[in-house]
Every structure is written in C-alpha cells, then in structure tokens.
Length: 339
Image (cartoon, rainbow, N blue to C red; front, side, top):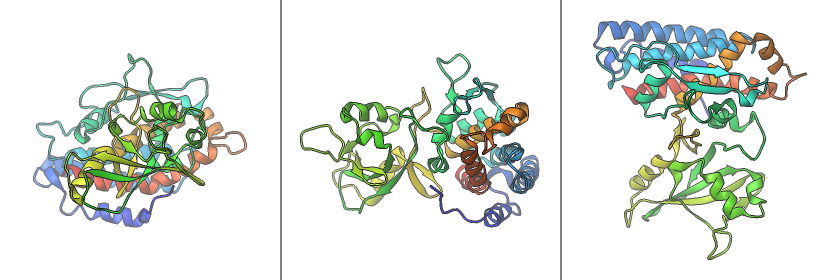
C-alpha cells in the first residue's frame, strides 16, 4: 500500500524550514545546534544522492542519510541531557544465513550511547534481541512491520505477521473503541480451525490483547471476517469508560495502533517484545541490514537486485524507492515528537 506522502522536494522543504530556528534543545545550546544543522545538511545530501543512483548503492546512502538524521533528532531531543544526546556507533549486527534474504539475522549490541539503542530508548521503542537471545529477528519480520512492505512482501508464507491498516468506525459515545483491521491473510479465513489459528496469529500483536471482535456465529469464538480481495475484521477495545468520548476512544486506539504518516496500523511486535517498533526504528533496522549486505556482500547483493535471478528484486526496488520519501517524512514527524 503506497501512502499519501508529499513529494521528495516537499519533504525536504519541511525539514529545511527547521534549520533557521532549530527545534527543542538544539536551539539554545551551541554544540547541539551545530550538530543539528550539520547532520541535517548531510542527511539531505545523502538522500538526494540516493535518489540519483541505482539499487547497487542506494541502501548505503539511504541508511547513512537516516543515521545522520538520527544525530539531529538526538541533538534536538528535550529528554536527552548531559551528553546523552551524542551518539556513538550503530548498535546492530547483521548475519546472512545461506543466502536466503528474508532469513538474514539482525541482533542488537553495543553501549547505551549507540544510535539504535539511544534512539529506541528515547522513542519508547523496544530493543531487538541480542546475540544471546533464543533467536534473532529476521529481515523478513522487520520488513513486515513496514506499511510499505504490504505492497511487495519479501516472503509469502503462513508465518508472516504483517502490518495491517486500521480504519475507525463512525463515532458514538460508547465504552468500546472500534474499527476495522484490514489485510488479514486469506489463509486465516479459509482455516479449518479459525478460532485457534486466529488466537495464534494475534499472539504476534500482544499490545492488542483484550480485543473483542465481530463473530461469524453467535456464541462462538469464530472471527467474522469480511472477505473480498482482502480479509477484514471489525475489532473493539474497551476504554473502561461507560460513555467514552471520541477523544477517549481515540486515546485507547492510540495505545493499540501505530501512528504512521497520520494513519493507524496494527503492527506486529518483534519476537520477545510486548509492543511494535517505532516506525523510525523499524526503518533503521531494515535500511541498516540492506546497507550492510550491499557493503560487505556486494556480489550477493547484486544477485538479490537482479530481476532475472531474484524473486526479491522487485520488492527491494519498491521499498528502496518508497524509502526516499517515507523515511525523511518520518524523520520530520519524529523531530516534532521529541522536541
């Protein structure tokens, strides 16, 4: 699903407009201001360069554009003080498994001031498993956490737990906050044991626990899917307020859903986490992984992006094209969030 983002130039015009009066703590601190301005300038140049080159090198420039923007975000962050706004190192490790792109393993490591860890803490985003965890997160799982990944999945199998669009229903004073979750996999609607399979599927969304849903039949636990070219389900969450206002219902929805570009999505949590990644950190992990493959495994990467050889080539092309606008837009929203 392609989101209704502004154009590349419009995104960067919004970001450039912050530089004359830097946000948050970067406005009144000389060193933080200098880092904010220099990092954002480098980020813009890297993204512009990424837009002008092919897929062989695009993930390198896109990731480092995001990495430099991360320094600007930390410099502006009101919650970071006493040198905690200075970032050191990436904080992630990538390991390729026998050439299977969706199974590339991603783990977290490093000191508290590493970029991924510090920004995750700042944004309330959960950590990724480290090397000692029972299993790492895979690139396929991270890909499925991005709305842009819905259009061209990196893998197609029943183990996928994709991000799903959420549409609010018409408001009325009510104890329940309700909406339609769109994009469940078709195999769920065709299952011979839909109640059990649905519960297992929803275990990947632990932050949505406590949901109620429209039932296929009264007095059962069978989900009442609406099936067309996609599979949708009306779901509800209790606000705990007998006649909750629209604002109170929206606040409950915001606890369950991920705000992404002004729209809500039900995003999966990574293994071992109780909530999904912040959108900035989901993109960070994906672009870091792709950049490491392009940098250190150039021959394999060239094969991955070859449409004559790889089943993943078109999906990689689509995501790395979407990243040129989606990521700067999320950077801008995140700057507003932290400052």
